[in-house]
Length: 72
Image (tube, rainbow, N blue to C red):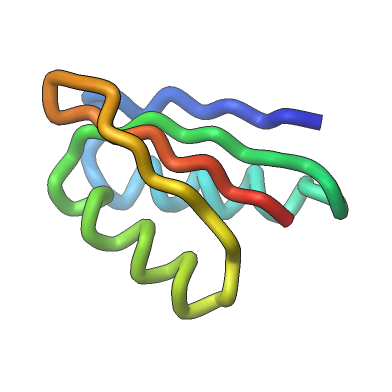
C-alpha cells in the first residue's frame, strides 16, 4: 500500500507527527510518500529516519519542497 501525506505549508512538528503515525500503519512492502517544505521538518525528518534505520529517498520537487519516499 502507498501512504501519502501532504505537509506543504505545515510547520514542524506537525509533519513529523503525521509521518510517524503513517509509519506505524505500514507493513512490509508498503511505502510512505511525504511532501514537506518547512525548514524544521526538512532537518528533523531525515534525522529521525536515519536514527530509526528506515530506508528513504529525498527528491526536490520545486519551490523549496522536498518529497521523501520511505520504504518498510
